[in-house]
Image (cartoon, rainbow, N blue to C red; front, top):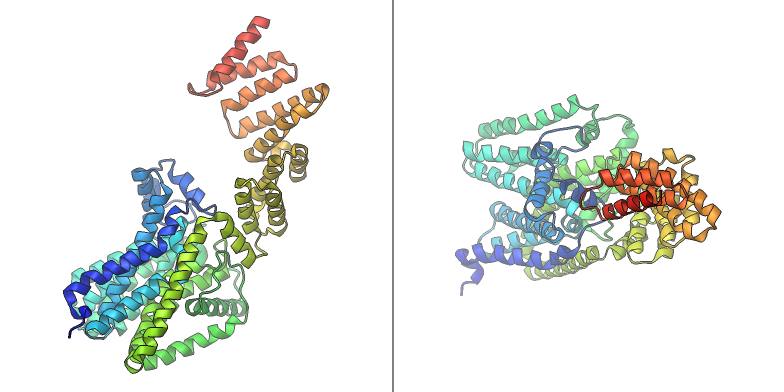
Length: 571
């Protein structure tokens, strides 16, 4: 009796549909994750301003040049106004698409017959789709770069396989097109150049050796061109220039750190737990695994040729992530999202080895794989739920990285939203004490002031302001606004004489605030403070300027005009 898996027309449609539905079911909780406090707000604020298409597509002096992923956010704003649930769904659909591409790749590459080919291809797809380290790249809107890059890389791989089977210009041109497009999503796609060379030279097919060498030359041209451009502009602030630059790296120390990172990421592929959003440091003993990786891969290559090719490909994609840990380009030296592409080739390599062992021990292998996939499914589902609860998410991250100050800052922000001001104050205080990032110094201190303000400690907030800044003029508009709110709250708690002096002080703050962040509302507020200080002439001037410059729909415009009328009558 023939198995339903032997019916090619049936499983060619049903298996992809089942894979798509299963991945969607595991990841659907992240649709309701909303905007993550890290990086997501910057994306929403920037693209909600209706940026011009030329500014997105043309290179400028920004840190990254990623026009394709930026274009996706631009379209998000044009079509549905940066609606978070839709954007999360896009990430999940990208992951579903990549899962299907892995399935199609495995179906073409793995040498098997009938139902075994279907099972092995499905296994490779599920192992990739459910690998716990991929949750971060999918559940985080800002993590879209990796799934989007993978979509282009895997499509290029499919065209490459098509070319190997029947060499023609169209397939090679399509391969090169998607290769170049992947560079425009993320700089680390340069590693795919090496992977593509490896696949062209080592995968079976009808392409002759001469044709393969010509394809290698064609692939090397865009790769070398991108590297040349990055080296030419290496003095710039771009991410790729900083990545390629070899400045301030000692060869011996750099080699050890590189091996540590490679060993760590290799372990993460094999044993992903514990998962951690903010990995700041790893144990130096991983250098042993880093040193052992090459002999292990060579052993696999000698005994399982195809799996060896895939493991080498995974190593190619791990290498940029390892260099990032040395160069300190990103806010965390290590990140699970960097393993999104390596898990593709790791899954293909594992399944290639499994094919051999499956023939000998089919029941044992099936049981072990099933248990592993069930375990991975539960972990992925749990992580997607965790991404929905921001407070629990950061509490989990703090527990795993207790020395990372920025995590306490983010956790404190969530505690403020929940009205837990005492705990928020403790979190912000810890963030201030542990912070080592220059870029986070003032945001954390501003948050400390905001917590004091939320607790009603207006005098403490004012004193803290002058601990940070000796003079008001040195403060940013954000700090000045917090100081204004703190002093305004203190007005009713002081005597009449002190109230007039404090009002004068507030006017000084508002004048500085209006210089750094012009807004007629500050003029209106200054008018009110001038009245409290007993200076009606100054109040009239402020109200007059506010009435002249305020938008027609400003909520304070009518009040400013009414104050002017009253002051005129009084005069």
